[in-house]
Image (cartoon, rainbow, N blue to C red; front, side, top):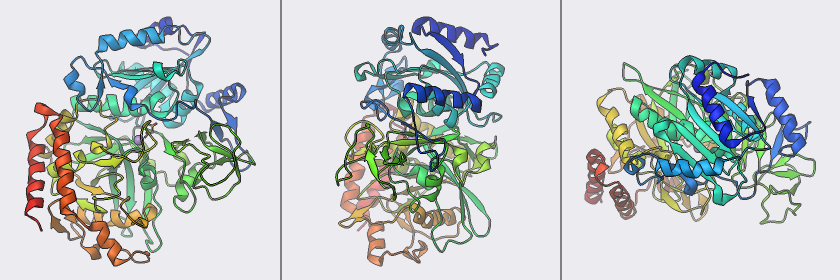
Length: 583
Ligand code: SAT
Ligand code: MN
């Protein structure tokens, strides 16, 4: 296979001239092709076959031990003007970056095959979708892209028709962390990644294209590319609502998207549209619609089990690639939080004992599956127009401070709520775990341009529509001395129920300085083992702590200098003054 598109053909040849592969292979995206890659990787040892009886067509991949998470410190936005990248990004001058990369990419594919992957982010026939081509020397990346995106012939046909695609070049290089870079050139709609074979560093359709480059395109074309799950919730009256929710990596987006209603919620149905990324567009009537640009999930494995999230657990019983999990004595994948099995080998391939303190699966170990593996997959994930969004939910991992749920006063205040998200860091990115950092809209690692411009863009929607989604903030992770106060998982539907009722003007709220809080009786806790005191704790607003938080947000905003939208600073001042006046 090759292409009739001259631009694509030339570009592929140019890259081949620099990287010098032994051969070039154009991916057609068929199932047979996928199977062929799997076979090849079983031969080379890139993959290991798992127990065929209990985990049919499932494989284990062990990544290099220095290459187990996204590397934010090595991720760059290379715009000609540094200010356009903003203080939220590492920046490098595009000329300097290209020079550096040209040297690193020189001959990097010699002795290897160069794979060309045409892909489409979003339903093939949706005008909201955008195409890209990833060139890579990693068959593991190809197999993951097969599960995660719509790739191959149909995508290529669209690219040939549109004559437009994001250009991504990836090589695992020699996996030397000192020669590892994930570089983005938004002005050229180009991505270059070298030295890592892992997840978001290497599957360029995901964070690099669908968030960093797409957020830039969205700014220019007046839409939003967001780090959000999309979930359908149907109530017993058979009314359907679509909620988009942004939480940082490894904070439960996949679980919320695949939620199972708790006992007593008869007649409620939850289906998944997406678990990680949403592209939001406004129609002529002012309604916001969302598509999920992806076609699969790259989810956190540890903690997945039949009690907490049966859907995710079912989704990974067959046709899944596991990365960096442990193994049991009968060759099943094993991870912390799995209920059955006798683990003997850890993610590094070492035989260890199951003594307490020993960890078998890497905390950022992942599963890759097609979205269609999900028992609650919604066909609307393939709908070209997407789904109409009623509510946008922001959230973070906060052991203190943030109440279980609150609603913003209006859109502009909601933008402040999103811009103020802080969250304890997780193993999804290299670096220290558990420290609170500012993660506006859960986009800190993913916004491809200056956050100040991004917030201005968000604020611009308020004057465009009377029908904007309501904006909320949730925190499932508040703790007291006995641990997490809220049970989370399926019980989060109790909170979503209030959110939906607010969207329908069917629930009251308490007006507080930080936003609207539910009346205690409006969150249904029937059948839950939670005391009235705990519920009060979950909604307690500590004035001093909040004033401190607002001050740290103010200082953070100051980093954005003159580009900072005055409207957002105004919203901030309003909250502070209301807090000061409160008792
Ligand atoms: O490695 S990924 O970026 O794909 C996963 C994540 O951090 O959300
Ligand atoms: Mn994510």
